[in-house]
Image (cartoon, rainbow, N blue to C red; front, side):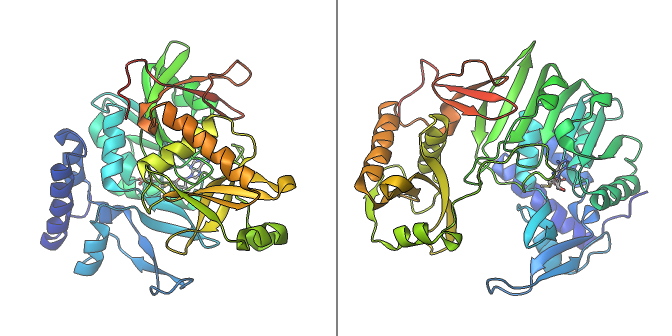
Length: 403
Ligand SMILES: C[S@@+](CC[C@H](N)C(=O)[O-])C[C@H]1O[C@@H](n2cnc3c(N)ncnc32)[C@H](O)[C@@H]1O
């Protein structure tokens, strides 16, 4: 039997539930599962920086079923992703943002009797919530790469009385889990730079897959696909950020150019840039317009397209899309709300041409595209994300409202 929640813990559980209901994150049946499975019971420890200083050491703060400190409960019951594992300075596991988890469950239409495959177990909280929704007649299989996390998740699920209903597999989720296929839903909770064939093939006809599709600028638009026979079609739903997939199963995008390790590039970037404001951006690179122009650059197969680490408005180094033409001595980048050209002005001209092309299409945002998937090697649509495992064709519906 799970340990009962204290009156104080209950206050925080209900506060988060109320916020999710107010946001309308998902149908009530999904959100009510958050009341029955409190988040703190799945988190052994949160990993937090010791201070606000850049480069501060990380501290593990114990949580668990006995958590009684109001500040700690306040942190646990915010609508944010929380880090539970750091390796070599990078977050390698977290418990996802509650509203996003609820949205993903709604995206695939989870309900009683569903058979679900989750990729990325972490604490096991999401698997527990999904099992609650699928009920005893449903089934949840969840795959975790890290053996220690998988073991802890099994313990959490066991103490909630869900050990018999959720199978935690230790392994590389890129392979899916063929023994449990076909699945009505595949929910991927780790950012992947490609779409493994295994997930598509293990989906039942009519089944749905939702995943954060990891782009080279480190954003992960959420992709929802439905299987119809041997075809998979859907759309991007929203921008998201997830920890990156581990293991060698998927080929990553090329690493960003880094002036710190490249004296020629550093010299080019020290030159005064020519800046052109773009009407769709804000001083935030994740503005839907600027980020969608980035997606267009990538899908249009732009020659010389790369990513580069640049100091942007907040003087933080960020990964930005760029046209890099080292032989011509030029680089032009998409930074927040502007296009910046360094060196040879032809580079900035070519980036502006691409912006003009995107404008003529009517400023399509990520959510405007209809996405269909086919194996690589077949002819792709004019706009396509070409990856080794699959090609995603992006097409604009005829009747799309122009912005
Ligand atoms: C954002 S966390 C998952 C959150 C989780 N579903 C929850 O309940 O909130 C991502 C997890 O994916 C795991 N992971 C990374 N690469 C993986 C792979 N190739 N196969 C399976 N799991 C993987 C990480 O170890 C990490 O625990």
